[in-house]
Length: 495
Image (cartoon, rainbow, N blue to C red; front, side):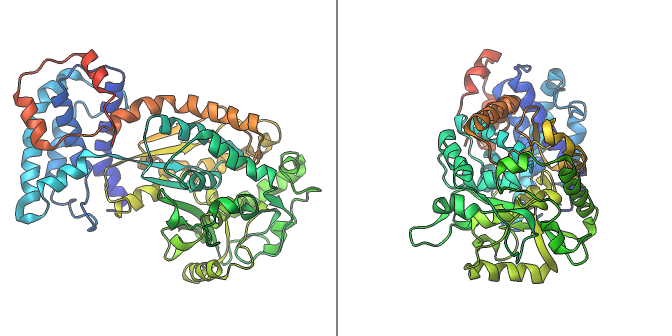
């Protein structure tokens, strides 16, 4: 399915389901539970493009259902997420039930799809979490991860870029999540000096400092036999966006990127104390690189052929390599990973890799495309995007305003593909790449606060549905319903 078809024909139903979840969260509807389930089921069925491995297999069979459903629900399909007319909903439910019955019959004709498979797909809605790029601002995502764990909501797929990539692979090491454990792992970045003097670069773009994730986090990402933990080895499914630089994309000679900004010490403190002129040179080079967009190639590690075998730390490292400021490269002894990247470079005509943020600040489009391709075994998902780059900056970070505006603007291309986007007003600075514990905990608390509205609606949006025949049977039985009853039922487990 082309993105334009998704936006025109499918996205309205995702917005409708989100509006319904918002209304239920605010306790603004007094519909019987079975009527609510009819509406949820219909809206999810209308979003369904495929079952199984064949992409777009249900786009055509369900086309007439989508058209008739949008005609039926047009008065209540909102342009804003909080608009919902209860009386119109009440009168529409019978007609919606008939439409779903007809659609069920149509897709089951000829053994295309069984009722059981259809119910299984629609019943369970999964969470896809997109962690955008933002330098040190991204530490607010810690509070989001903590709040999701408290809600017992586990992401089925994480896609990260830049700092979001580092946090994604750290989160994905285990299905179990404890904020204190993750904070301890992040503290290693500072304690073990993850920033070092630059060395020669094979695959990365040179920078004034070298990011050395293996030195800081290597023991956490090494198997007992000494081999590195790859993206494919992580407990949760993770993919990481980096930016490939094509031939002719660099406005400057490659080696110049490592000398534009000089620092006396290789440390987080030195980075946070860069002079105004140094920041200006960095920003100028970054924007010039971004303007070469036609020669930049987004590389999605984990999706690109062979890259699920790439060490998770290296995927995150390349994704976090801020041009001019931070370089990243493979350990010299890792010839296996070098062979993987050599093939990636040959296929895509690349000369270097750098920060995924250069391709997209919040890569929700890539997440949508991967889910549509069958990556997580279902197309029924909610995509939640975390976007910290637009947060107001202080100190030296103010000088990055042209940079943050240019790269934050890339998020608008991804807007149609997320269901919820969480932005943050209070964050660490872009340059606070290795903050102390107090800053990390403050960032986590700020992240929790910003995420609270989304945390309220997600349980409703991800609510498990019974099979269609059970829903219809419940509607045929007389039942009473109050808002307080629904509040009690809201605590049901999310699958």
